[in-house]
Length: 208
Ligand code: 0O2
Image (cartoon, rainbow, N blue to C red; front, side, top):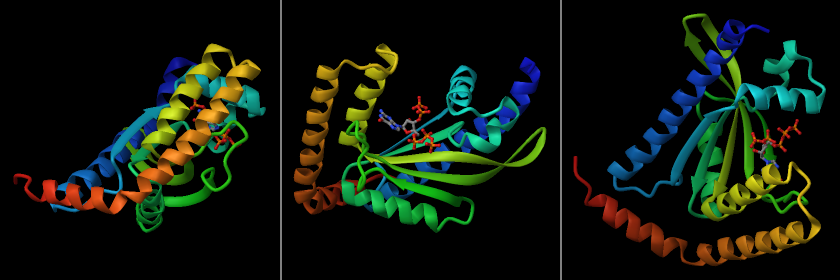
């Protein structure tokens, strides 16, 4: 397909990422300005590069004409939480939003992947309007703790470095590190109430 054609296809996804990042960042800001603990600590977003979309389509046997219907993470947003308990709160917030239609959910926190990967994934349908008109696109929202994010970022870059064939000894070390991440999240949960109170106190003093 031609470059202009891809621009038209991908424009709604670029806009969806921008809008979703803005909406979730606003939730963080509003909570803090109201002196309330924010269940979301940080928001990231990206539109998948065309080369990665084409790679994924090939890997999954999806014809090029069907990428927008069969690849759900062309628009991707990542919500980073401080504590595991915050993740279900964020999931509830998303489920209750009228502008985000939840299509499917994957709980890799209860059912950790064999690699050690843990994260909560939601696929949503989200409507945007560009110069080409209105369109509902799929977007993937990944929700995870800071510790889970640290692990998955390192693991992802190793997968990239070794082109998906990470040596066994490194995979084993990653699995051990994943257990440490699990333990760290549990230990941090023990002091969650104290940290929440301290944060509400400091945000409560914020300026208008
Ligand atoms: P990238 O480069 O991050 O975009 P499916 O639901 O099976 O049809 P998919 O997309 O494989 O399709 O689903 P899944 O398993 O929910 O994975 C979606 C995304 O989650 C991946 O996107 C990764 O971002 C992340 N992910 C899944 N498994 C792992 C893992 O073992 N390690 C890390 N670090 N991330 C993982 P992409 O397109 O694979 O990659």
